[in-house]
Image 1 (tube, rainbow, N blue to C red):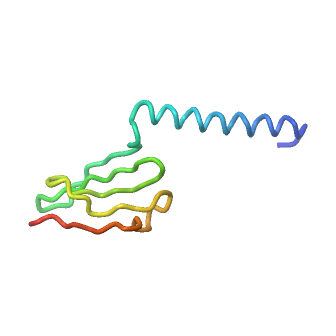
Image 2 (image 1 turned 90 degrees about the vertical axis):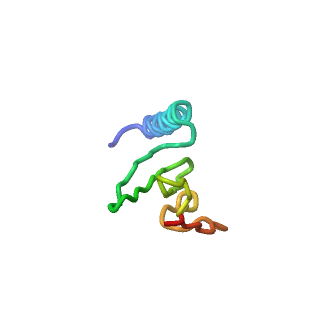
Length: 90
């Protein structure tokens, strides 16, 4: 978009304010949890996949609640520093 650079700055500020508003809505309605899904793995096993602010992915055993994996904030495919996996008893 062309035009006055001051208008561009105003549009960017409005976009940033809109993101901040959206984050406040998520935090006020869901706390740190952004997304949750129960996934059936077959043969009676299920996992709970959750995404928390500030971008932490967690996978837990649905039956036992044991945390199977946790990512670093903002790095969804990197294991969290200091995370020690504890696998549920079968």
